[in-house]
Length: 181
Image 1 (cartoon, helix red, strand yellow):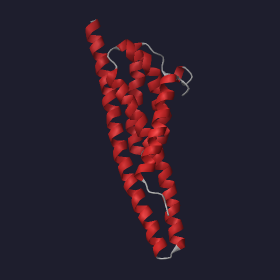
Image 2: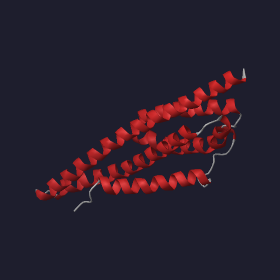
Image 3: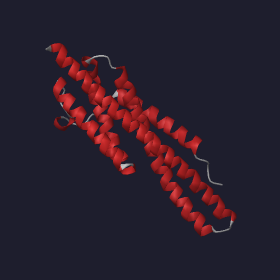
Image 4: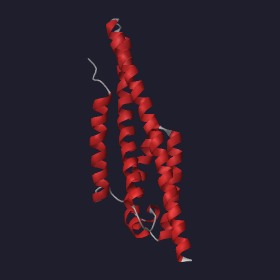
């Protein structure tokens, strides 16, 4: 019976990993769409400037500023999800999973509101993954976050992920979007 229960838990971990992989892939597509839209808006700003239409250029520039802000958040969230997926793929047993479930749940909870703001349909998928994580937490004997205070991002593993994601997001944003003239 122990083997069967362990297998069930491993399958649940796999489902969480697959669910997060789907979220990651959908976020990647959303980032590509937003990047393309950003480039198009930038070209519209340039075209309006070339035509001497300052009012239209300002409108496009404001829209571009808002889009870049959303794009930066989307890239950061995408990278955080990617880091969690990579960590889950390297976990080999339940004891190791038990060690990381708190920081993983904390990270997912911290990015969920931002993802729902940028891509509501992806947010729904992430909600499903959060529910699976809660179920798995009960099963393996960890207390879900609703019964304990949320883990602060100063926890070493989470802090590393957040720092790395922020650096990569800033670099990708600089590389993918040209600066206005």
